[in-house]
Length: 346
Image (cartoon, rainbow, N blue to C red; front, top):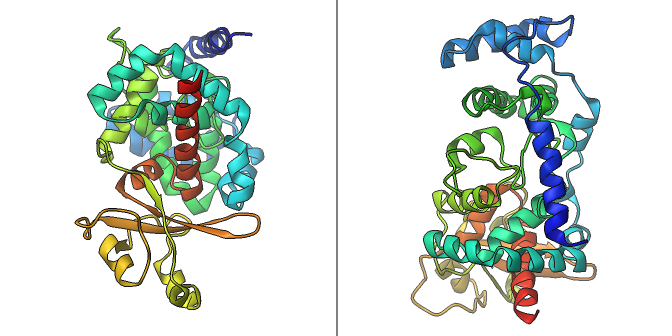
């Protein structure tokens, strides 16, 4: 089946979900235990006062949420925790590359315009949508309301973050007329083809097709323009590199503690070094002289039988703002390059 047809079918399904009647303003609170909890009622009171919401409507919305153990379980075993050699094949495979090349060709005109306007390569925009939702085929199966409520009130490690996102979801529902209880997304509450969190949707989504609305489920123009805007707002540098391979000197490889102090790992993705500092340690970096103050991240990727070292540059850091994972950012970048080559070869 033609990929554009598949995408349209997925979009129609999402639209059917998104256009279900708004329930937050008229539903009466049920016997749902969540909405009776003191901490939940305090949350409803706070966000209502802060944002001019009707507290009864907020409680009515929360009464529709259900705590889902499967959401907490999914949070505790993210794909990004896998070693690189297991994570990479999830996204770097023939189907995702071929589908990406097709998507890129079908949207060539709009992608060219966005690349010229924002400076973000077309293949990077395509790769983001490819990694996030398989080019719109899988926008998520979880209730976004359930996901955000579950993580806001039953997942202490990141409860403050998800309470902020739950608040933003109520505001998004108000501003964009989005039905709280009917929206599907990821187990973390991300939505639409590009999987924007509610705060990102409100702050960085744009109306790419100039129809007066920002629709990240159905409008490919809105989706791609929003991703491009997100990257620019987070510091994307037009025409700059993303990563470069490096060779470490034996002196560094034989000093595990020193090497570990230089490496970026986990969610610690702010640049620890400059290009000049790495070179002073004997690291061979194939970048021309004159950029010694360039912020860099020294990254290690565990292959099956070896460790690959690369330097992440400021644009790599920007990709990690989409998902705070070096594995995620590298998968996006490698998929982008593969898509560009495949689209050109066709």
